[in-house]
Length: 96
Image 1: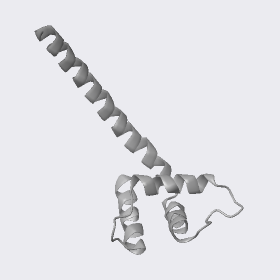
Image 2: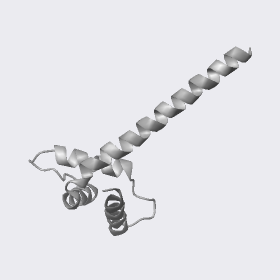
Image 3: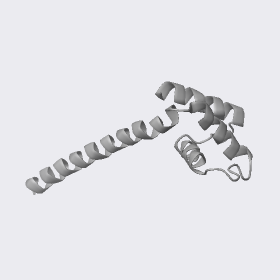
């Protein structure tokens, strides 16, 4: 019984380390996409939040990248758009 508990503890510790490492890698690698052109990303986030069809006829990829930022750093419940965009800028400045 002790062997089973010990084995379980080792496997659980390994899984926790793997998940923590994966989360850390994901946070770093995903945010690097936004660091290259922060001003444009913030503009696209604003368009996504204010217009019903922000993309128009152009490429959708930059807007998909901006939408990921909205998913990663969501707007707070009572936060105005200006405050949210300022918080996004501060977060990107800190991370980049």
